[in-house]
Image (cartoon, rainbow, N blue to C red; front, top):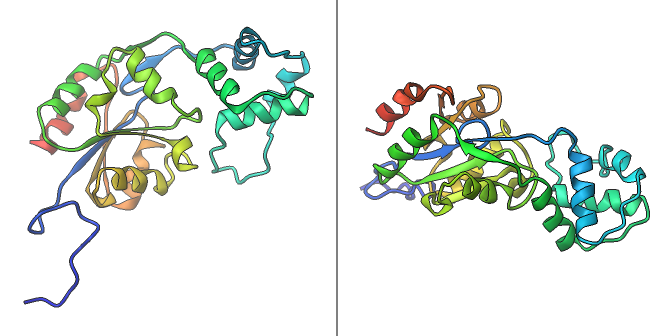
Length: 226
């Protein structure tokens, strides 16, 4: 009998590795309209909630409010509150957060690859998660729901704002692996961007590149979970 300690980093039984799936959100699972002027949309939403927002806010919103490393994901609600304070306006974090969710509540729809991808997820017992580069807490779940997809269909929804860094940083893929009770080497990540989503390969996971406009591009994923 081996004296080696059990592998506590595998969510497995009798040394059987469990593969887990993570899926990119924006551009892969859903298509979301972009704000032509995010700062103006935020200012409008703040005013709608009773906050005075001077014209100087737009410049502050577009400027860095925290001296952090470029890889660090500053929560948008923190950034916006700091921008308001820099122009003499105090607002609660809760109110700012609610206004931001309003400002970025844009039209969304599933991509052509979404339904076939969701069918694959529904047909397997493989644990799954959404892993999104998103700087606003709660926006990923809101966007999924707006697209008509049940967020409860995933075992976890993980955003870069929850982790503090953005894909392709290795910590993003390690975080989603931890959420699903697996080792990062057992993560299959599905996405449309080799630059960001492809970062999973740098930590030993598998990247499945899909074209969101071509449902046949998920054939590799179907083979991976079969």
